[in-house]
Image 1 (cartoon, rainbow, N blue to C red):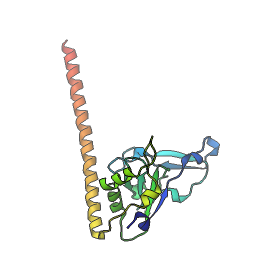
Image 2 (cartoon, one colour):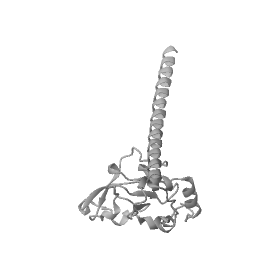
Image 3 (cartoon, rainbow, N blue to C red):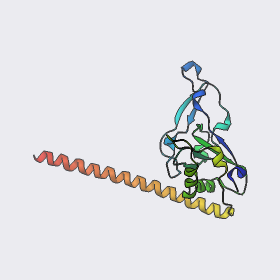
Image 4 (cartoon, one colour):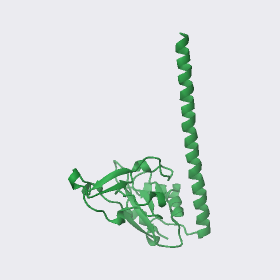
Length: 196
């Protein structure tokens, strides 16, 4: 099935029209999702969400909801799944919001599928623009989504979750090793200076 047959797809908000430029224009403050919040592997980074001051109350359609799938519209076209912790974030126009309307699919499976090499190659082939390669809603809506049983989708979702946890632990281990190496180097340099 095509993605458009199982989901509503909309582009995020163009922020420039809604940004309050001076203090008295501010009508509402929101947490904004940015490219820094998304890692290439489809996980959320530890970066804090940016504040966004708006000159008007914004429509709920531009905010993440639990169960949404977001995809970057520029390379590397990373998709992320929205859970309870990442709901109610303002989505800018460089993301598309995919909201499932078919009960035969789960968002974690769609996220995994959109992050597959096969889909990313397809998006790269159909990219537009020369300075910065991008895709659009039309291209996204025509992606063919393989229909598999819900039980298999749930297994894929569990494997994906374990994979992301493992990557996070490995990243933390590398950071700790870097600190250890730097500390050891500093000690050796300091000790050698004392001996001169």
